[in-house]
Length: 251
Image 1 (cartoon, rainbow, N blue to C red):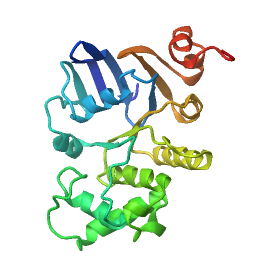
Image 2 (cartoon, rainbow, N blue to C red):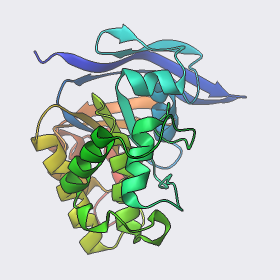
Image 3 (cartoon, rainbow, N blue to C red):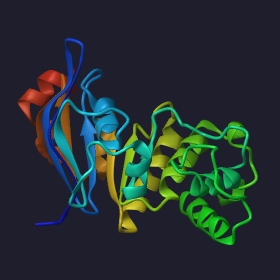
Image 4 (spheres, rainbow, N blue to C red):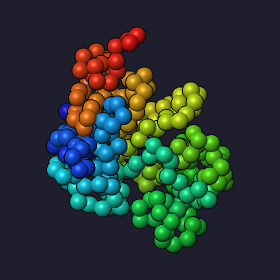
């Protein structure tokens, strides 16, 4: 059995009378590529927020490489090894791609302009270019982030998480708002990142065709609960998932 890199146990979070995450337990093995899917309002983004410390669970535990990180601050969780790219890219809009990545390396949270020191440290430049080359952004090193295409802004958002060398990379709808060509390029990039080895990747996505192409395993959330889990073929033929999410073909 593969080593567990990220594990959530009995996670529960409610907002007023609404239970957003209801006793969810999932194990993400080291160096796996896993998808979390579900209809709107299923609790997927809340699930990521609980893992990253953006919100604290009412109950349950989050284990990263054998350590319970519930109660840690967002910056502590970043330092411990969880990186996150957002559905709406969070960028330093006035900085170039290179400056953004070097700034992330020198900030306590990775997404703050409260940087320690100045940009010219050689090691930050080397790491920034290493990640830019991985994601195909090296030709845009001097481009201001706010002037990038939507697809490249999403890539830069992933780069901001990746530059800090996380153990786990959380991707919140990486192809949201993209056209067909950009979608293909993005999902190919995610798959290449995983194939390179060393990363545990968890992605939230609506497109079943995309997740079935790249994910080793799929977990389905519905109304905050874990409805089903399995391979793409198992999920496509699961009657509960069809009724709650996928729908009947031709319906």
